Structures are given as C-alpha cells and as structure tokens.
Image (cartoon, rainbow, N blue to C red):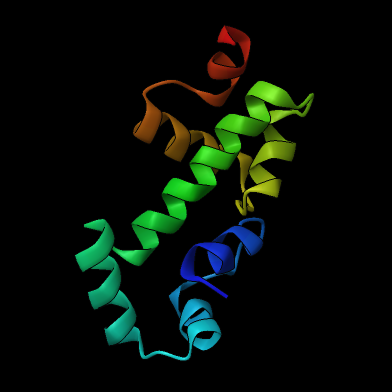
Length: 101
C-alpha cells in the first residue's frame, strides 16, 4: 500500500499515527519523516491532520451529518477539539462552514 492509501484507509481511526504508517510501509520512523518532509514539505502528523480536515470539509458539504458525526468519521474523539482545530486551520467553525455551503 502507498503512504496516501494507508492514511486514507485510517482517516477515521482516532489512534492512527506515524508508527502505523511505518509498519504498513516497512520503514523506520526516521526514514518516513525524512521522505515525507522532502516530498511534501510537511511532517507526517501535519499531513494526517490535513487529510482529516479535507475529508471533514467534504462530509460537511456533501453529507447530511452533524458536526459530531463528521468529527467521529475523521478520527476526532471530541467534537469540541475537532471544532477548535477546524476553526484554527480553516478560519471558520464547522457549523458555519456547513451553513455557508
């Protein structure tokens, strides 16, 4: 499986982390971090968070789900934390984003 596929397959797993990617790709953590930094110019955790938020935006726009359901589907155990992260990264609350679409 590819790096991107492993991340996408585990987007809803709140305990998903870099170690899971290392196991899936059979590489060390150092190798993984070095490659991702070189290829994507971000760290692994930033990439995972970015994917989670991208999926959340899609779900808020295209599915009839509550903010709590979206948070759960993209791997956040707390709706409040999801809302805080969403607003800090995208400049708007998930509720406002959903209404604005």
